[in-house]
Length: 439
Ligand code: NAD
Picture 1 (spheres, rainbow, N blue to C red):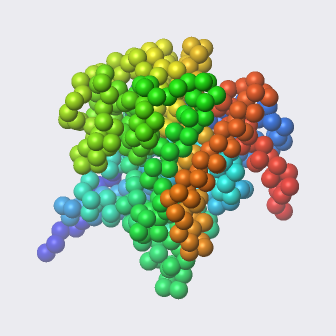
Picture 2 (picture 1 turned 60 degrees about the vertical axis):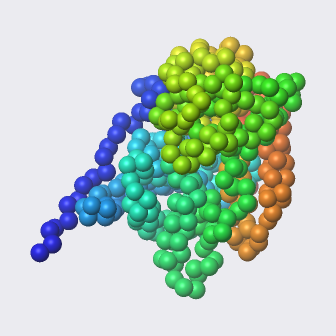
Picture 3 (picture 1 turned 90 degrees about the horizontal axis):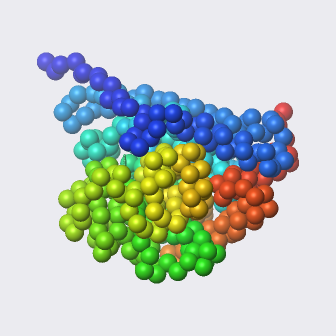
């Protein structure tokens, strides 16, 4: 006789990742930036209040059969922050420190990002609190499929469109799309490919999406370098997080003659004064899952990584990695935020006081959602755009947003971060004033 299934809850973990100060409340930090920018933009109090909260907070608990035959209960989230500009849009994160409050912050960031980039999309974010590295490919597939099934009609190609984020990738999106397609009925099936973006190109994805976020970071760095009369050739880069965003940024910067001298991920930090081969390291991580064991690098401590003499720093891992200590240690001219929320407010203050420029997350990593939008449009119209077409459109979109950020910062004497929020809020406020509130 078979035994009754055992149901375990997914392991809980501290909601703080290494480097995160105990007093860092991401959602409060994001709300603080919103309020600061709202002082500069003439928006009615009720709009500020609406945007200070997500519209919907969805939590699902769902069981998944593990490879050993046992069942485990997982907790999944989807936060829908705003859809005043279009369908909710934002990534799915699989990470052991994921929390409801962090997803609220990340979903709000997506609203500002889509508004700043002038996309007809709103903001959302979600995911599951677990460590994907602890699971086999088969388990990851079942976890993803059960999560998408549990979300049910809370997502959809005209309603809420997830994409990859930390711990998820094109493969995750292929499973997500396939699961959704199989729940909508035969007739609608083919019309729902746009339920997620960041899919493999052969499964309805777009050219250029895999590198898109890194490409956007690089466009921003180029804009900054041009305005600062800073020649990128021969300059040094350090990168924290060598996943999708970090590795593509490093590879694309290497084409401009920038050398990667320091790199870190969840397994530790490496230094090479001569510069790593960023492409080979990317291949190594794809094969081994981390930088651990990569040859040609000296293992260093986290605190030494932040003190490396370099020119550019791209944080591309978790939030709140640059607090006061790291901000005092950094020996770079620019921090380009590939990750969402990598600087704490007090870390940011110190960086700015020290004359270190920051290209904020809202614009720096917006290349991902911008190309996701191109994918969604192609899915809707059954079109296939070329890689060159995507590259050209993205470059123009990033340059335009960068100019808008600069204009706002100059006109208001504020930081680039507040300028991004300001530009985003102006558009949102205009739409609210035109549409007003139902009924
Ligand atoms: P990923 O899962 O591909 O890579 C994450 C990297 O961070 C890995 O190298 C991992 O080892 C490292 N990391 C995890 N914990 C760490 C720790 N405690 N210390 C140091 N490194 C650690 O994720 P990704 O898609 O590259 O996302 C990275 C960041 O970029 C996230 O903040 C994400 O929200 C943001 N982002 C991603 C996209 C996208 O298109 N993927 C778009 C916009 C923003």
